[in-house]
Image 1 (cartoon, rainbow, N blue to C red):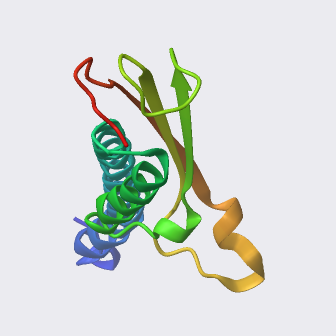
Image 2: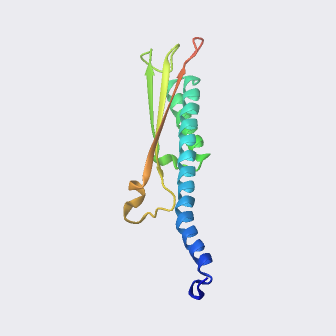
Length: 144
């Protein structure tokens, strides 16, 4: 063994370990944020569609669906002010109505973790996530 190389293996191991470990930890954090965002959007869309078809009228349905989206996204720490909600009704001229089909689409841009808000980097470093849920209004629905 050469005298000049004594103790360098541990230093090399630490250096290579850090070079490989830091990106791996960031990848895990980014995937966790995306998974949380995906679950939040999916749950918010599903719950909004459920409460929309059970509402007595259109105004109350919109209020309940908006509240369901807010709570669904807040459960996962996603900002609901950045969410876009679209409600589409088929099978009836006004919704909710008997046997109508309601489709709720929720879109959110999930920011990647540890990206600073400087120079508007957070908008470019975000991943758009969208989910759609469809529910049918009961044939026994009696609205106002």
